[in-house]
Image 1: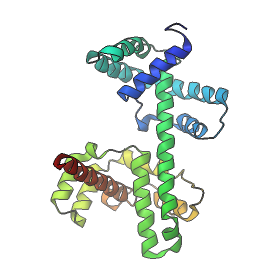
Image 2 (image 1 turned 90 degrees about the vertical axis):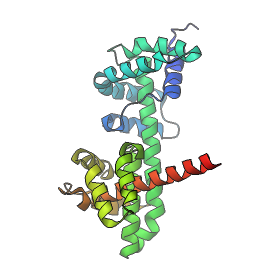
Image 3 (image 1 turned 135 degrees about the vertical axis):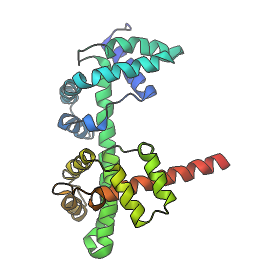
Amino acid sequence: MTERSPDRAAQVAARVVRRTGLGFPRGMLGGDVARLAAALDEPGADGAGVEALVTVATRGLWTDLQPSTRAAVQMHLARADGQDLEDLTTVLAWAESEDADNPLARAMTVRAAQELAAALRNAEDHLRAAEPAVAGGGRDGAIAAARALGTAVVVLLDLDPEDFAPEIVDYVDRDQGSEALDELARATGDLETRLWAREVLSALDVAGAPAASEAVRRLARGYPPDDPAADAVWVPAILALAQEGLERAVANEADTAG
């Protein structure tokens, strides 16, 4: 089997994607990737059918994302050595190609779909965990629905506390009060992200969590309010993200102290 055989090429591409973390932004993924994610999550999925879905999804992404992928490969190549250098040299030709059927583009599409499937499972688990409280109604049910919604937005949009670090630090420095939360929401809640959050939440229909699913979809209905601090979707989401950032900071301090 030669270096340029399809199997070998796919192995090299998959290894580079795994070792470098090359990936497509979650916000660029559309329905084709979502359908691929669902297929990958099905036990005993038809191999030929999955490959066809990979082809369709990749062709929908590569035209827009090929230039940024090429730049990312060049960056990794400039500081690589050993096996990584060899692999990235091979992969660079694919990153420079406008042909969406190249092994790197396909490997990145599969990775994006796998990560999306994992995010969906994570969000669904949180809704199932919230189901008893939400089904019980009242204040506790409303709080449980909001918390599940916030976590779902964070994982489905692939939000990272580091992207909002200055705003989260300011929120913590202001003792995490209600006014500080309002300012955190306003400083981070751009309209495009809030619309995207509603889009992904509106598709959630989790088996075993009918009450939580309906509660989340109900909160996500309609157009976002002008004020992010009054947004029943964004406020729980940024609060969940801030909590994740705090937990990371505490864990890092513990590791440093240890």
